[in-house]
Length: 281
Image 1 (spheres, rainbow, N blue to C red):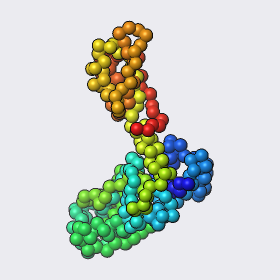
Image 2: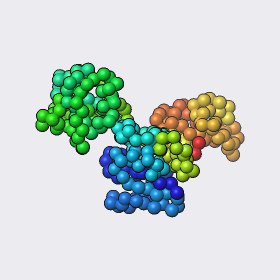
Image 3: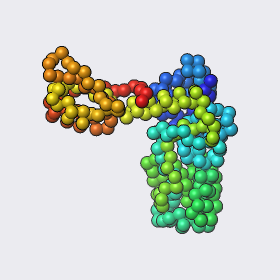
């Protein structure tokens, strides 16, 4: 049975649960549920604090988990990424009062507040900067105003929260992050994990592609296929109307309207775009 860790709260929770639901796994009915048994998929889903997931997975207690790449790196747990999941994209950056600092080198001898002490400490060591790292749980935006720190290092998505308290980011990003599926470092993937990976890959492809169907005159099929090459090649079927064929192909969701315009200009008729809910490639 697959034992999977899922974030129980925070920025990754909603997207992680939505993705698993699209992949066919049973969703939890109540936010207070800590464990969901999914007998149809031979799976147990454990809803845990995102920061703890890498630790459980790294110890081998659970087969896999969904957490942020930043939290994985910060934990120091013996766990590794299997695949990125495309949501929860953010950067880990320095911030301070406007004009206080320009680069990480300016932080020599300063106090830096963060919730990611492990990740920050490693970065400072790599940059040769000797600074005092002050670990705080939760929001760090007020640490400068309260006199606890000279700068902060935090996860930034839009920067709005920092600007609202009078701070601005500076220097190069410390790290980039997004949600990822992880497993114990060096551990062989179980059949349940391999199935989960296939399903999640299918969800990602389904989100990025649509199915295009259209009718085209047979003499223009080569031009049409150049526009819609598909994955392994499009499906082409003769129509009852002589000299015409029906074509079906997967195309990227982004830009599919332009593809439909090109087909129409080529003389295609009945051009349809439909969503893909799941797939296996």
